[in-house]
Amino acid sequence: QVQLVESGGGLVQPGGSLRLSCAASGSIFSIYAMGWYRQAPGKQRELVAAITSGGITNYAESVKGRFTISRDNAKNTVYLQMNSLKPEDTAVYYCKMVVVTTTRTYDYWGQGTQVTVSS
Image (cartoon, rainbow, N blue to C red):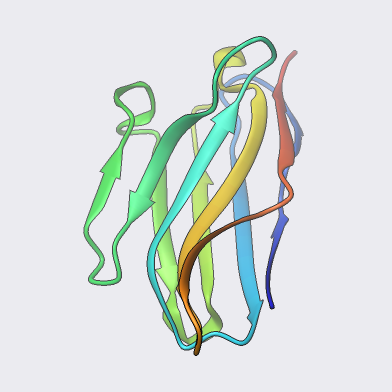
């Protein structure tokens, strides 16, 4: 069994910063892509940023230049540094990892962490 645990969400003023973390644990052989998604009330879940096992990244247009995704393979952890936050960044943020175990390759999701940008 694999579990993803997120941390780092909270309330921040516009222009502020937050750093999200997501750590995977369990019977992990390797992890391919890691990513962050978000879902605002009344909207569909959308990709925010992703990073491959080789370190190639891609970002949603709305966060380019403000957010940075990174990963620590030794810790099975992915990070999302969010700077210059805007009210429209308010959402529940979810991490996702493509995890290889001894029996299968599967997408695992974190439980979600609330990010609220408000003055």
